[in-house]
Image (cartoon, rainbow, N blue to C red; front, side):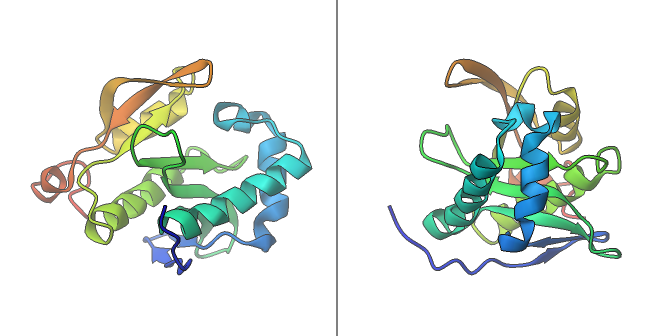
Length: 183
């Protein structure tokens, strides 16, 4: 396994800033992982487990050279979730994932941030494909995947739980006018 210096780029969309996770995000992640919103991503977790999860998120950047960003509304600075690239040991392929905090759903933040993360994966990292793993009961997340142009492409068993693999259109399909066509 290669170790990378964690130089985490900041990405900008029309409304959002995707930035490096850090210690200042601990309380927000602890609240998220304590809530029912975390049920599809390994939660709920107690404070100590959520703190360790933040360390895992930061460590992923060091170990893989990419990871998930904290998502802030640029105008207000409010942190509304975590979105980005994820591929821990045992994962079927590199993933684009999103977690929104309480009250942030329904505004298009996950889709907007995931489009930026996917463009980074394709344009900067040279990925030719990406997936998103979605719990079959997580209808909101499935809707985000579909808005991104991803389609069901099999299943993956995580522990004792089966999730749906959504396959994203590749960079060639996007540059030819698919999904967001690199808006």
